[in-house]
Image (spheres, rainbow, N blue to C red):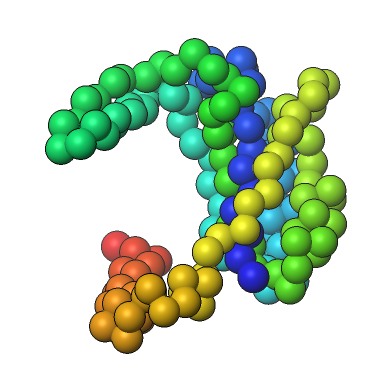
Length: 149
C-alpha cells in the first residue's frame, strides 16, 4: 500500500522561511530511516504558494490564478510517498517524524494512493497496459535523471 504523507503549510513556510540546520539534520535522519527500512519512494519540500499557480476547470474553459493563496491551512509544504503494509504502519512512521515546524503546532495528513487494482473492471486491459508502459517510462526517466551530468 502506498501512502502520500502531506505536510501542511504554515505562515513561515508560506513566507519562504527555510528550515534551520537542526531541523534539516533531523529530517535527514528520519528520511534515512525510511530509506533503510525500504519504505520511502519519494520526499520533497515545496516552494511557497506565491511561486505557484492554480488552474480552474469549468467545462472546456481554463482559468489560471497565480499564488499566493490565502488559506494556509489548506496548503501543502512538503510530502513523503511511502510504501508500507497498512495505514497503521504509515501512522507509526509519521508519529516518528520530527515536527516540521518546531515550536508550533503542525499537521501531517496521511492519504492512501489508489492502486491499479482499485479501479476494477473500469480499467480495461488496454488501460492497464498503458499504465504498465507509463510506469516503465517513468522508472527509466527517474534513472536517467539520477545519472551524473
